[in-house]
Image (cartoon, rainbow, N blue to C red; front, side, top):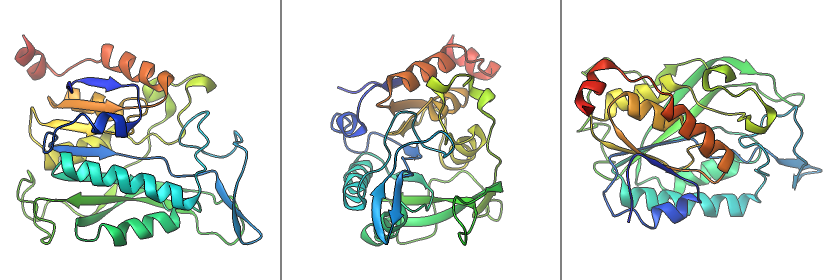
Amino acid sequence: MIRTDIIYNEDCLDTLSRIPSDYVDCVVTSPPYNMNLRIRNGQYCSRQIVKEFSTKYNGFADNLPVEEYNQFHTKVLTELLRVSKVIFYNVQIVTGSKRSVFKMIGDFTDYLKDIIIWDKGVAQPSMQEKVINRRAELILVFEKDYPISRQYRYAQFKRGTLADIWQIKREPNSVIGRTTSSSSHGATFPEKLVETILENFTQPKDVIYDPFMGTGTTAVVSKKMDRHYIGSEINPEYCRIGKNRLKNLSLPLEILMKEK
């Protein structure tokens, strides 16, 4: 049994096992980037998490061997395609994810609809010499409804109004109230990014799923835009933050009127 408007504190594969096929209208997510898998002497190696480097999850190793990282995402994407017609999968190409992302594109090429570039406006300095700074991330769009075509038959935007490069700046930590190291999330995507997806590719009352909910951004934006949400998040602290954000949310008047 699955419920909407809830964040489940569990592995997303557990949540997905309970979601019926075609139950979700849209997936919006940003999975772990495997930031802590490094290369030493030409071989992959895991490094200890240090505060100076950005990591997707506080206290989460984020350093799976490339094969395991790829197998996990293969399972997740297979399940997401079962439950939803369209998936927006935000990834960053870093040392620990590069080979897996390229393989993911190849393995799921029959479902890869589009690739959107998220331009963050500022490039973070690379951690090593002779490495290109990363200013952009990729949003891989997978679809099972009509993947062979570039046309989104359910899209809300008009011809010529939406480009494939989205210039959206990151939000400061203060936006979601992260003031302590215990609640720090180093790679939260901005509300504007989720808003852009929901505004252009979904309708009110649609069900939105985020299998890597983090501190609740997808849920918060869904609620603001009169969509239902389902979230999965393994970190109990992030679940608490997400639920507090939802509890303290000020909704637009038109949504408050609908809820009465």
